[in-house]
Image 1 (cartoon, rainbow, N blue to C red):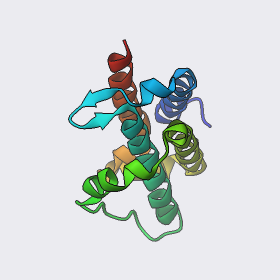
Image 2 (tube, rainbow, N blue to C red):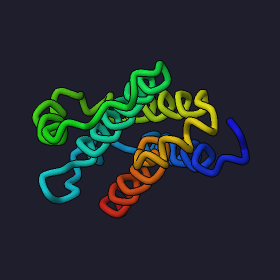
Image 3 (tube, helix red, strand yellow):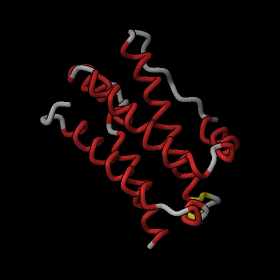
Length: 143
């Protein structure tokens, strides 16, 4: 990882923050409501899904197939299948997916990452933003 790339550094920091959060979660914490029908468990499954999705989209991009567009039904579909993710694995999968996409991004050239941002796809590079939002949401619910 280039220490000079702020997004790669922030992604790693967010992954470390997520990993620390997951390590201190108790079983009862995972069922805590975040509002809007979300629980801590669901937020972690959500993070796992979106980091994994961006990993595979970036793989497609890196192989010259372009960055696939997002389907507008993805979040609704995720809400329908997220309960299948066990409480005990939701956090572990969120960390694993974060590490996976961080590695994928680090393997891309700085020019490729800049090109993604220029094409309006900065969300695929700035994974830290999405993680920070949900980590803050979880931490607020736990405090």
